[in-house]
Each structure stands twice: as C-alpha cells, then as structure tokens.
Image (cartoon, rainbow over all chains, first blue to last red):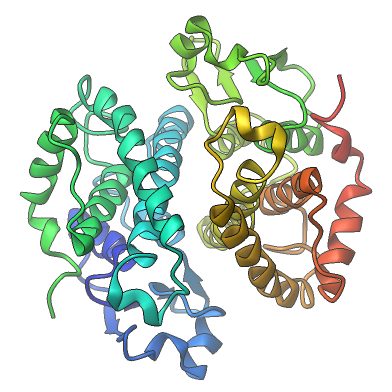
Length: 207
Length: 207
C-alpha cells in the first residue's frame, strides 16, 4: 500500500497520527506539496479522482480518499489497538462522537482557518463572515466536549480512538491562526495536553 | 428499540429512508416536534446527551445519536439489503463517497437553508454571507457528483447505499428555499428523479 500525504495539513495528519498509534510502519509514504499544487496534477487527480490529500493506494490499484475512510480501511488490516470499536454498539458510540467532533470542532476550525489565514487565500475565496461564524461556533460547541471530558479520559470511550485523533489534529490546526480553546474549558485543555504529549503527536508534522 | 424522530427534517429522514429501503418495520417511532422545542426538553436531553434528533434507544438503554451512526448500527441488526459495504474495501469506497457527499452537498445545503429560510431564524443566528457562501459551494461541488453519476447508476457503487440516501435527503431539503440542482447537471437530475420515485422517498415526510 502507498499513502499520498502532505505535511502539517490536518486531514493527512489524522491518518499519520492514526498509523503512529497503531505502529504501522510498512506503508510507503509519498509526500506531496499542496502549496506547490502537486495534488492538482493530472497524474494525481487521475488516481484520486479529486484533488484531495491524503489518498491510500491499495495493492490492486484501488485508491481511497477521505481520512476517516482510509483509517477505517487500515483498521481492517491492522486491527490492534482497536480505534473504531469492538462490536456494533461500541462502533456506533464511537461514530456518534466522531460525527459530533467533525461537525462541531473539525469542520468549523478548518473553515475558520481557510477563511482567515493570509496564506490560505491562494486556496480559498475568503469570506470574513464565514471565518467569524465558524470560530464562534466551535468556541460554543467546545462546552459539549468539555462536559464529556469531565466524565471520561478520552472523548468516545476509555481509550484513545479515531475521535481523539480527529479532535486533536483539528484543535492543533487552529494554532495556524493562534486559535486556542478558552482556558475555562479545563477538561478539553487537560485532554489536549495529554494528547499532544503522546509520541504520535509528531506524526505528519516534520519532513 | 425506539427511534426518536421528527418529520421533514433531513437527518431524521435519512434514518427513516434507510429503514424503508431495508423494510425495517419493528422499531418503535416516537415523533418529536422540533419547532415545538421537544428535542430541548430535559427528559430528551437526559437521554440523548444533546438536543439532536434522531436518536436510537437500544433495549439496554444506550442512546445513539447522529444519523449515520444510527444507520450503521441498524445495518448490524438488519444486514440486508447491504448499504454500508460487504467487505473492507467496499466499505471504504462507500465511506469515501459518504464523506464527500456530507462535506460537498449535505453540510452546505443544511447551512444554506438554516442561514436563509425565515422559519429557521428561531433555531439559528442567521448570517446571509454564510448562506451565500455555502449555496455557491454546493453548486460548484455538484459537478463532482455529476461526473460520478455519468459513469455509475448510484453514487458509491452499482446499488443504492447510505450515500444515495444522504445525498437525496439533503438535495430535497434544499426545496425549503426553492433550491434545485442546475439543469445542466443532467446526471444528478436523472439520479434525483430516480431516487424520488422510490417507495422509500415518502419516509419521514408525513404524519
């Protein structure tokens, strides 16, 4: 298998972090430069269908994009440690928190950064009101995660799952615009420090 | 099992449509009025954790929210017809299209409606620029679905899956603000007509 990756972008980092948690080290990594437009080359688009990074190319030539689809596939090949659920009920609870985290944290932070960071103007027709709306939205939504993390060491269950990986890579991406969780979100901040102290935190960040 | 549902909202309709495709008729349905605020009652929030509809209450009292998590759980109990994939590779391809559809169609249409329909002002602090950005975004993104539907009868594979259910319920929700796919998206429009002609199209729409 071959992973088309790029550095410091939040969605590729999800996959790299997920792989690091599982100790997966036998997937070939091909690093693309998004700012250099390599994800828009005809060759890459021919493989991935869209100019989306990351993409996982299977040995039979099938190419899968979208970070969570890639991670769920990787879990079928490298089942331990389990990060998507051990039975249908646990899988559903993890997916419930995954979707809440995508909708309430990851998507609004991504939109906030893309619509306000000067360096992103090359990728996005920026609308200041879209940035402001999304960043205010995630600020309010973090209360939900804070309440949850008051009762649980990790977001979905009592171990690290795909949900924690999505949340931490998104919150950490907010640093691009100096965005941080409010200090009164003490449980989010405690969990964030613990996640960033894991060895997997470095995955996808350096060359 | 018991499904907390409401009528005409796009996310509950996903679950009802999915159940109709599978012929599931032994789940108890409890209909809440969102406009009447029933999803915000302390009793409902105590069960669901958040004021989100739909929610599925399992026989052991566990409550799952988020439409796709509910559908994936239901698939484990009612496996046929398969709508999430028969093996890890097909599951990954379906999830890839599911996430593209959520991000490029469902979320922007939902935001477009919530930020522009006068009746939604009670649920959302409306920002006109957010509505305009999202509706323009989905208009452009539909080219991706149109190209895909030029080569395939359904979005993810050669049969109806969860992805078609998500896409059709979202596009149909756009009718609230008289939003329609552009006529030149001929493959999207052909697929939309075929989906809306299915018996399951009525699910979640009437009392």
